[in-house]
Length: 117
Ligand SMILES: [Zn+2]
Image 1: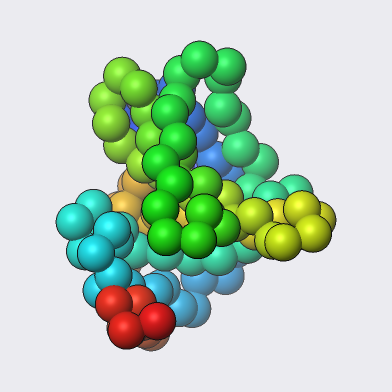
Image 2: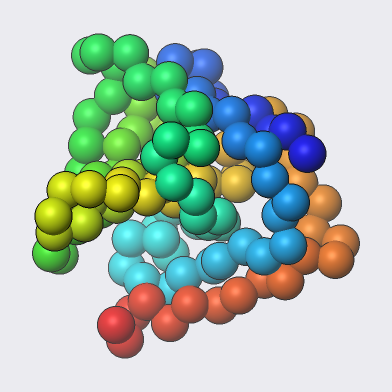
């Protein structure tokens, strides 16, 4: 199934083809504040639209994940994981930024204990 999503004002976008069986809710200090629901894929498969100058990036902890957010509306539709070798970037899609709300019927909600990792 194809899904599209964006920040609230529509500058940052993603498009994925996915069979979403599982979402991750993380309790770390960052995810808890933003209230994200995550689904992971590769950067190549996420079809990201990120116009130059439209976003800012928040880094914390080990600086392994680039938490991008829209400079205009503040929404964070995705983050990009940066592996140590710089190859094979992964993307955490925030399913709360889908254009249409995702039904969680039949979807496993995995609680990741990020606060203790
Ligand atoms: Zn925006």
